[in-house]
Each structure stands twice: as structure tokens, then as C-alpha cells.
Image (cartoon, rainbow, N blue to C red; front, side, top):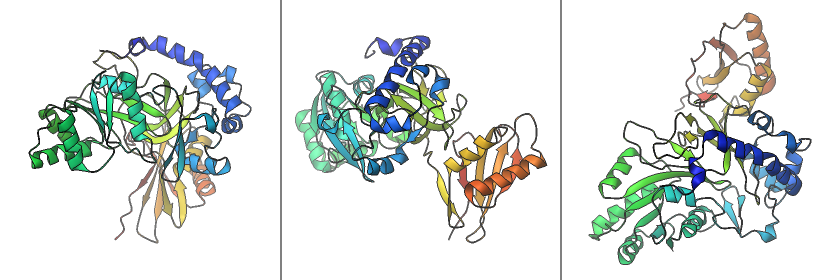
Length: 416
């Protein structure tokens, strides 16, 4: 049922183990990765023994990587292992360079594959890309660690995919859900029997419930995973949710998760949607408070499969929100700066309305316990002007009035 005993630890035992290892990992990053030596300068790793202390460290966001890597090629100085000792370097659009180390299951994908039913002896077709980007290599490493045999087909060539599945009696699939749907539809068109295919782990895009249900009707159990080119596996499903139930995705064991308000490093309340920020214990690429740019939220309770780690609701959109108002960019980071200067505002959302040439932006501010004052409104108006270089309006709203969707900028303008 479970990959190892780490998955069924008590929450207190897991938290104690992670926090005990945290100071050493931060010290390792600071001492061996020049980029983190700069980012974490002045921070005493030995003092970072709690989530409160961790939350005071700066967030390094995925959107920062391009500039960091230009300053310090090829990995922004965030790698603690020299490039010459790494196994691979991948290239994502941007370009952004991502490393792979030489250790077994470096991306930590075996656990997610095991939860999806993959076992030693399975014959697995891996349709994720093997060129430039790491998805193919990432999931393959976990499959090999489990003892599976991998057929590295990559993307495209649907007829050849069908022929390989039928000819080799492949029983497991790795790739996107939409490509799996195309493969089985092509098999139907060609009248080729691919009923040997019994399980699949999918990612990189949304899995519509109707697609999952249709594939399950064919005898293919489909589970999702959530990974990134920087962090490897982040979270995974262990059971397929019923139509009315979101059982969420279970956090991988080797990570510390924070959900923060977009544009800031401030953790949000449990259940509130925010940006996924991860601290990893990877020794080669020791990312500390890495902002993924993805939105999600912690899901209450534990998984019915018996795994006890925290669950998230899966991918819920992008946190790195920005838009252009009167030829000026407005960003989530700026909204975070406004909130930092005015802690009496619990939550805020900048709503932009109007037509071309007559944009109007209003900062809607949740004020718990009491309504806003004219004096606070005047100060907020001045701060908006100072931070964004634009004039705006302020509207005070009651606690809980703003939707729990992670948005801090809501562009309602309609053009054309």
C-alpha cells in the first residue's frame, strides 16, 4: 500500500524531522551555492528552527531565475554541486536552465508512481518529452528506481505509440492526459487492441473529470501528479476522487510547503488560496523558499489511503499576476508592498475596470472587526500612488468579502 514508513508518520513526527534538518540545509545552501550565499546573507541558519523563522527568509521565485542565471551562468549560483559533477542540464523556454544530479531517483518521482500502482516488472511507455525539458527524464528516473522497464517514446507519432503498446503489451502510461486520450482514440480508429494498458500517471495539464471517467471505463486507472522542472515531484494523487469529492494531492515527503500571499512571502491562513512556496532538501540544488508561481491551497484532513502528509488542492492558477494600466505594469509584488505598509488591512485585491484610455483601478480592502476610516483611505491612496506610480481608488469591504481564489489583481476590462 505504501512506498515506505515515512508516508504514515504522525504529523508531529514529520514536522519535527523536517524542522530538525532545516538549519543544516540552509547552512549547506548558504555555504556551497554562491547565489544563496548572497540571498541569505546575514541570516544565521542555526536560528531557522521553526516555520515562523523560515517565513522571514526571502522568497526566490521561478520568475527570478532568468535574471539570476544571466548574472551567474548557468544556474544563477543556486547549485551547490559544481556543474561538472551534475548528470544533465535541461533547457526550458526563456531560456531557463535546470540541473539533474547523478543520484538514484534524483527528482523523487518513484513515490508518486508507486501511489499510482506502478511496480517492479511493469512495462511503461513514457510519452513526456525527452529533448531540452526534463519531464521525460524526471519521471523515467522514478520508474527505473521502482524496477519498471521504460519504453522512451516521447511525444507525437500516435500510430507508433499504439503499435508499441500493442506489440510490447505495455501496461502503464506516463504523459499528459490529452495525449493518452489521443492514443486510445487512435487505437480505436486503427482497430488495435490496447486493453493491456491498465494504469497511468498524468501531469503537465488539467485532467478533466470526464476524460478520467472515460479512461477508467476502458480499464485504465488514471492518477495525477504535480511536478516542476526546478523541484521535481511536489505532490501526487493516491486515489481517484469521486465526482463530488476532491481528495487532493499529497505532498512529497522531502519538502517543506508554505502557501503565501501572492507577491509577498507571508503565509496565508489554512485553506486560503495562495502561491506554492517550497523548501527542498536536495543537496545539489538546495532551493530555499522557492516560489513556484502556482496557486493552490491546503486541504483539510488526511487521505483515505492512509498517507498522512499534508494535501493540497492541486494546481489552481498562476500567482505571478501582472497587468498594464495606462502604459505602466502593475504586479502582485506591488500589492504585497502596499499590504506590508498597512498591516491593518487583512486582504486586498486590485480591481481594474473601464475601457481603453479610461482605466480605473480600485483597491478593495478587507477590514476585519471595523470599517476603514477616511484617514486610512487617504494614506492608502498615497501609498498606491507611490508604489504603482498610478492614481487609484480605495473601497473598504467586510471580512471574508473577497473570493478565496488567490487573485490579488483582477482585470475586468473588456477590449474589442
